[in-house]
Image (tube, rainbow, N blue to C red; front, side):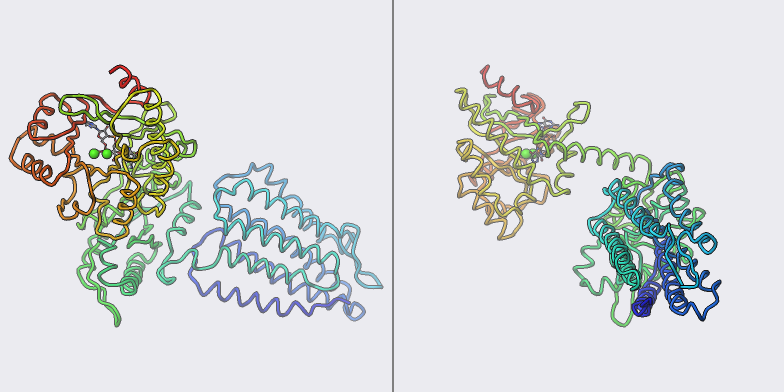
Length: 629
Ligand code: C2E
Ligand code: CA
Ligand code: CA
């Protein structure tokens, strides 16, 4: 006797999942379509599994053709389900890679075989047959297992090959639901009369729902619009045929707005904006990409200027409901996708960056994304790869630029980082430092260059040469590291370098009124390190802030030096004498000519740095320079 008591609760839970699924908004993605397909097939299987079991239990009362047909339909469903789950797995690997058609046919073949064997079973008895004693398994019955195992196996191989495209959660989900189906097949083989397989498939569908169809993963603003992940996925699927004009709408000064209005009110306002944009572009897709940025995939014939004008006008009125009243302005970005075959990360990164630019601009003009903009992002991504590599291999190069005194004698040096591209050309830190700061690896990089500087100091000492100090640049982000002082102290100890010979260069931007920052600086001072203020004259200067840090030296930024060279005035000399009065030493940067050098010495600078004396040079060259003195 077949026991089908698990089937009804399984079906009910399936219906619950389905109703939740349909109550949320979805994109027309292949993955979603296959998910629905999977549920439909499973419903089909449950219905015919139950019906066939009832017929089998009562085979004396039911006409044989009916028993045959019900079993046949059940097996058709069974094979289709294995295949549908496999197809779902392939769709979530997010690859645009197409398997060769001949291999695809090979992979599909077992499914077709299963179908054909199920259909002809009433006549051949291959999978099952029904006689006077009732229902029996046929000689090829074990195909239901082998084909099931086959698709799990192929699915896992597929995922393994494409694993880079997926997040851990997704990979875990894929592995987990395939494991559950595998277990279901094993249980079914050992307990064939208890219809438990559908319960296992239900578990697998639940895992799929939680890992892939959970609204949190693809919706934003309390579920009211699609998020940036959805945008990426949608465009990836459309690759080869991205026929859209992309319009970006960004709330100006989003961070400030959030601070002024509070998070809840801002979010409620953004929901209203999202709804408004959806009503305006009722045939298009609206996505919210965090930080006040909306992206609309509009019809290629859309009049971008006209529609932006309409949105701009709408922003002149407040966003108002019972709970909120926000006065906002917006900026715009336009990107025509029609020239692109596929939407890669470069394109989306450029879009995000341009939206940020429009968000900070405070004007309502439209920022058109050009090929140059995309090329720039492409270049940045390349540089990011080089610098990440260099950090991984500890191969960032130490360059040194001499610092000379009034007599032109080398007294110190500034340590400057360099990396190389694949052809060996140098890449300027002005290009890669901001990228490292954003990617969160500046601490690692800073530590490496600090260590190389100490090793170089050690080498100088061991060879009987001398230099009074070396300046090392510290990025503001490095101060967030609570063990910064300990780490620096540990390194100087390892190389037996006097910490007083290391001068840490920080910019004014780092000297924020923050007790944590002050503590960090004091900790470093306690360990014996000295501080130098870099790039003076580029930010907002605040003398009282400068007193917070015991700087020994102030470096005048090259722009001040060059401006004075072009048109001398009384400001710079007065500033220098004030600083000297306050006890600071002064260094002038960017000395490119003898005239600049004498001007700076004339107004009282103590040290000079610039191409006039030497460009930054590799550490070995600098070592030679010191040896030849
Ligand atoms: P910075 O600290 O202001 O360094 C001085 C920059 O001015 C160096 O650029 C140097 O090559 C350049 N320079 C020196 N003399 C002259 C001159 O006479 N004329 C002109 N036009 N330029 C001159 P570089 O090496 O490209 O470094 C750029 C910036 O990158 C540095 O500016 C610094 O902020 C940052 N940086 C470099 N290495 C590191 C590092 O290891 N860590 C951190 N956090 N930042 C670094
Ligand atoms: Ca510097
Ligand atoms: Ca500087």
